[in-house]
Image 1 (tube, rainbow, N blue to C red):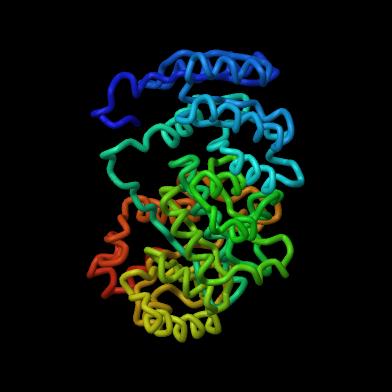
Image 2 (cartoon, one colour):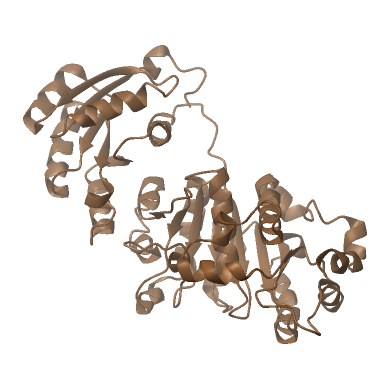
Length: 421
């Protein structure tokens, strides 16, 4: 939104729309009419020659260019337009079939950004997306407060197959349903990343594209290197070629996460069960780490060894949350939450029960949280985790225990066994 001290002139948009499809103007006018405090005049031209002439005469502060030809052609137009109106900002309007599913989407976006196209609008235009783009383009005014830092949560384990990716995906989707387009899931399992598969998304860009543009990476470029899920979640996918994962190092991942937390309200990170420099960099910047284990003796023994290592690496217990994931059918002799809490001398903060629908959801690419009923225990526990994450601030996550873990509950793990037995 505009700063309260902005003048009325600052609030008035002068928009020039350039493209061969006149319905783009209708879409823009309709979407803009439902955006409070963002009204103005809209002009439309269908040729590049007319665009330069109208821009010179009307001095628009926003120019929307239909992405209907090559990036190099649009770059030439952008240069000519900015020569006439240096203070204008240029946004591209595209249909998903034209840009998002092209084989060279990442390269196309990068080339357009180099051509001074500062943001993008999907067609048909929606009021929600138009408002977000206008806020990004026109809210950087003198005297405005610094951008808030988003919350960063990492899901980690030192054993594969315990459900780390499944939990990261379901939590991210649940958060995105509350905050569309403000949640980013980063898949840092660089050799065998599965988040895109669990979301039924086909990667056209990945974290490697962000790494290769690290020196130019800004909020706009990062957002357009992500894949959008139907929940409103954004995914920065793992490399499709495992060899490319070698390009991701600790310095690069730190830069990406720090940019992500300035661009999104929530950043969820799925990690690989390997304690390497990339994971250490993630832990350095994470506000909270959800440590995932199963109710099986080998998994618990592994976590018992991992917890002191994490503290030695500078991740104190106050930034750790222990998640017990029962991703298998119960059996006689199954370890209970109280057993695990006593063995680890730690609170089991979240207990995710077995739900056979989770296995089906992993095969279909439709996260279980989208199908769970309000009274289902799986959904209740995922939403409890989401609620806690949603109400924490980064400082709270660093300095205090989770709000639901009372002193009495921490001291009495038997109560956890009663609740989940």
